Length: 358
Image (tube, rainbow, N blue to C red; front, side):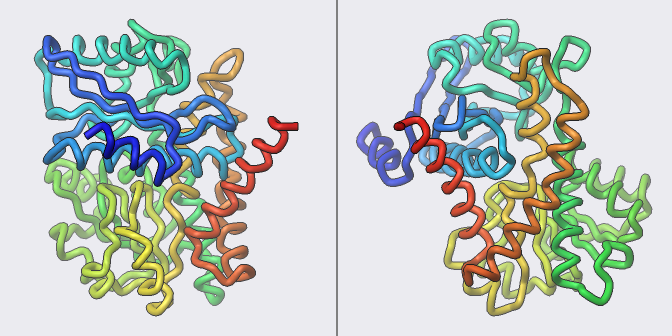
């Protein structure tokens, strides 16, 4: 397996992949560091049941690369990293010990990777890590942390939707009256739903968690459909805010929308869908360009003096301009939006490398 990991690092441009195994607390973890040119790698820790180690490795390596581009586009002094703990996200017994041990693991990396909350993990988990390591953000606001980044992630996606509407719906540029298919009403999705309804959009939601659906319908009187049925709902905007790779050849054959903009990471199955999206006239807002509100929020904990709400707000509000730039540059360069977003991120990283080598 080592040769495979090293080959993947060479192919993808990753700097480091580390494995940690402590059976006494049930810890099986992978930390992937993609690039540290701009600063320490930062990215969340996922707690997830993977079908096998290879799937976990693929997930964490792809996500860490996305974090590099996300932080670079957002203008942050951070690189890209990600981690995963292979296990049941619903675990209660031994949970604190699991995350405390993971905190000890982070110390071996000596600050090259800083973790945060992600799928399956919480602020409480980050506090368990912080009891053993200082290389963690997204911690309790009452103890100097930035707290839950979900509202800021949702705000950034909402602003990106506005930028996309200004280009896709010249006759009615705002979100008022738009029909949005919202896939996933978890932490981020629920905040995004609140913003969309408040703006006057009509929203159809789906989620595999019936409790989340019930809450969304109760609070916002929206229509809910089965998860698979959402792809057949006519809409102006499809918003993936759950698992990745839900935009693929099979779903694109069913989707009827003008814009795709959501909070999920790795929304596209692979670059082969670029051509499909363009042929259908669907404007795709690259996920790592628009869902950076979370990393902006938690990354602020690393600043001297701790998180500054004014700075966070200004950075998140700039996601509108970042999205507009990506969409406009896509037209100018004649290239797919995700390709352009990656190019813009790499341009910033390359410039930083040149300065370091002078």
